Image (cartoon, rainbow, N blue to C red):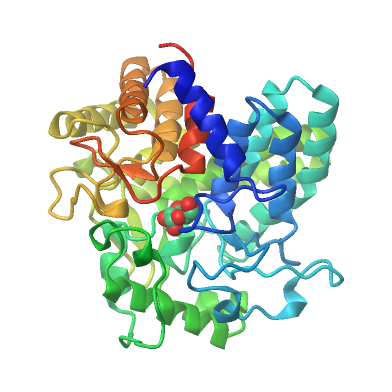
Length: 432
Ligand code: GLC
């Protein structure tokens, strides 16, 4: 398809997936507002409706908890298409900020991209008054959410924050979570019915066993009433995820710019201290023999030796040194020789690599944009451009899917997908 018509199509998708102030990732499969999807979607919206982009972000924060947690799903309205819905999450009412306006939400979070998105929109917006007012309004909420990651998810101030569920990583069935997840006791609970399989082929979605374990974790969270301290001490799944920590570190940097405009000196100092601490702590995750960073299992206190795409998100976080960047660039180029389209979600020569299954091999545009952006920052223009060209070609060949086969380019998962369309508008629609 031609560039102009792809641009038109991607705008149409965002408009079609609008449910009145917020955008669903795709009709049917994901009928609510998702946390990190919102950030990427807003990047697409600024290309044709800045007001609407700010509204998208504000709408998500309506579901923020008193302690700063920004949930991974806000259930703005009922839908029979998705499982687990609000009843299963069973969130205690007293967690919300505004007691008059309770929202139905999940009880876990997702990778924090929003401070970065706010900073980008603020820089690129044409309507500067609207942008300054909106960013100023969002600043305290962004600060509260990042603080929640620093304090509730890293109460010992190590510099790295933990997650308790694969869904919090946004990369739900990454092979990196296989072994930490295997320890979760679960029964095949015939009482629940997955809704995802009514919309997408089984071979492109997580296995039943994985799903049972996802549900077992959720039951555990509910049983301890989402108490942050108990979760930190007792959660049977506890990992340091490279995606969350990379996006958090990048968010902290962008939050610092916002604090310089809207915050106090104390807040700026607090953010700067956290950035320094995290940058140092990241070294713990560097694995020279893999030429990338590795995720960490906090229950066994060991690294998870499966190279996955999120290892390269450290580039987006701007934490590696020149030497590490060189090694990572070589490694990523090597992946590029093993499959047709970069960036596969798992190393193509890993035994866990599966071309069509969700986060175990397919290419995701949001990941490509972040890695491409990180490479560009470090002056690795050629590889960054290759990732952009590959992504563009995928859209041209297959349209706007949730994810893509890294070899035959077929579109997989949900169709007419908001963040894919948004990243196209924001990053790919320019002429190369
Ligand atoms: C899937 C993805 C997650 C995304 C959600 C909505 O659960 O794994 O990252 O936020 O869909 O698109």
